[in-house]
Length: 247
Image 1 (tube, one colour):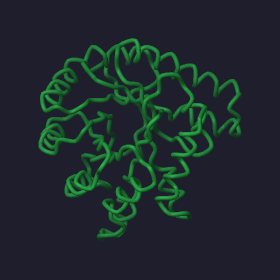
Image 2 (cartoon, helix red, strand yellow; image 1 turned 180 degrees about the vertical axis):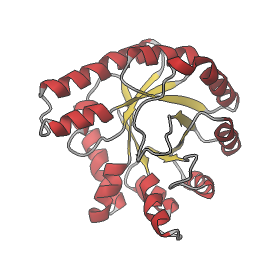
Image 3 (cartoon, rainbow, N blue to C red; image 1 turned 180 degrees about the horizontal axis):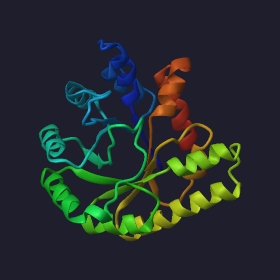
């Protein structure tokens, strides 16, 4: 069964817009779990634009499911992770000017650096995942670096899906799915877990959720957006149902 990890960053985005104390990401973590989330994800960015240091401790304490910390591959972030001891760390690239993560981690270009980072996290008994573009070369590099899992960046697929008028059989969509499938095969052949995420929503999640050997989907923005209208517990439940009923 494909698991659903819910990213609650944008609850903190709303809070930080007013620099106040609400909405509280801890409440979001609880509501997401009551809606059926199998994991909770937060991204502690270096610029602290949404999730703050105190949030990661409080959210982790509120988790009765796996807690996944997204972060940059830097020494200060590794120190935080080793002290926090989340169940999993997902290493992602960061750009101060980007609105959201715009691409995958170039593991091949910084292999030795990432080997050292992964080794430190593994020594702390933390599962490691690399957020990568759908590129078999990056999957091979992630295996060499010692990652336990790879999360394939589904943003290009989601963009193609939207541009095609939500037509899952459009050639541009099928091309992106093929890239993901080829990369997923390399991930699985390398004995790593295959996860996927970024820009997935209620319309486009199905073609990704049915991919062979998929372990986990990470979805945030679409769920928080729907929560504005139906509440977070219901928004998570609706996404969970879509993923669960995928043949």
